[in-house]
Length: 391
Image (tube, rainbow, N blue to C red):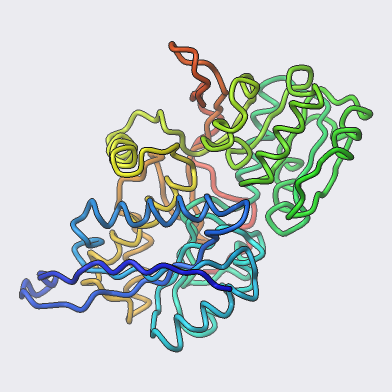
């Protein structure tokens, strides 16, 4: 059964740009398809809540335009995502969509949205299939292109001096992009490579394979509940203390850390954002999040928030309208907003060009494990597929 929630934010008086004439304006509907149930449900919940937080912080608007966010749960089912998108566009007459967490859902939904003349802005999934020759003028990614996230982990592993890696990821598009991205940048030897199931919760066989291979590090990409299960079993197998782990941010977010606790100390992470980033936009976001929700803040939340800001910056220039997709694109590509991660711009394929950082799980002054930023891995990085995009 589909579950859904709707959040209507009241219309307000709005001064239309370009004319300066005040006029009542109907809220712009934004359709959010995201994963709210199952082991990965907290990822979509954080995207949804942070997106709505940005609207609340702007008085129920984005870029001065009143908006109405309609949210539905894809339950990590591509077919269900397709059905929701079809309803949004054909019944609810929604042109602007966002919210998808998982790449298999994105690949089922996004091409149909674009073919029907819609606009899609991704707060998370960035599959390679849509980043190169099949890029689209109405498709934007605010988070990352999947491979680049894992390329940063490979570069981090190089910097940390590791030479032999065992790598694992789920057998779906983002998992395939993960292993390709890591191998593209890692200069050492990959001595073991395993694809797990997307819904897998028992990793005993993989633990045995890792132990037998005798690598000097493990790279694994398992977002959401699967990542928590993997880390717990890695710990229970006695591997966490003996065998260092270098992971991308989805494998060690604040929720995963809370579930694992002190055993996660020493895990190396790469990310484009962390809660301790010292910039005004991030401080305002983290403060507002803790006051509003008082729960661990994740990368997914930061991406949902930045996605709302990116859309708001474009709406400010288009008078809150998306009917003219060329005008919206011109406005969107300026990326005229202060991202929580700091430096941000869109590359030629409308995916991020951004900085990547090395993080590590350490204990703070009170002895509580936290994810701490240690330094920068690379600056102003786009993605491998942008060269093939002809936009």
